[in-house]
Image 1 (cartoon, rainbow, N blue to C red):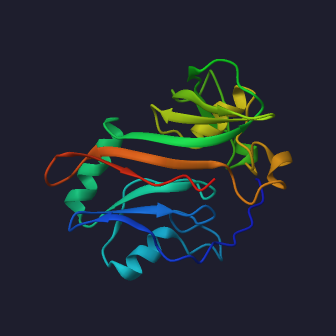
Image 2 (tube, rainbow, N blue to C red; image 1 turned 90 degrees about the horizontal axis):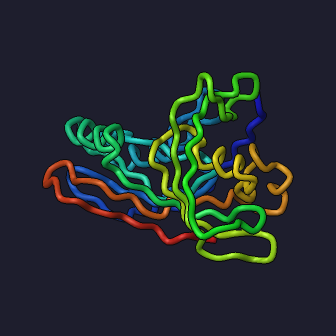
Length: 216
């Protein structure tokens, strides 16, 4: 199992939108979405929200090292509705990432199944025998001398999906402590940000899109 050192940022909550059904937050990198199982990992975005907005309920997660848009429910009915938005793939997400190397081509599609790498948890790996289906679309935003800025659109929601897929393409996300540890010492955080989230509102059923500016 990979060692994990937890030192969460103490910045105030950044609320992007709220009403009596939902709360949308810009999660900082380095903060767990939910409490960890081990001692010293209870501080998380969910617990901070519950402290300010009692009754806040989890809908989905972002990796600890990923920043960006997360939505929470304020009642059980809204939680169930939003859960279906993700399960039925009606929720649409885009991410911005800086990846190692100069990518060839302007856009592409990755279709590689993912499974847990049990001896090296929480690491995931491509596994064509046991893996669950995972698809990601990518599009180049900008190229640098030795890196590429890309917009990633996951069509499925597997754990570490974007991180695994970009690594398999030969362009791991910069600063990733698990899949590109050789780059982690050069960056204060992993260069992955959940930029937008679009889904239907649980009460009005109106399509809404929430966005958080990329901090890198």
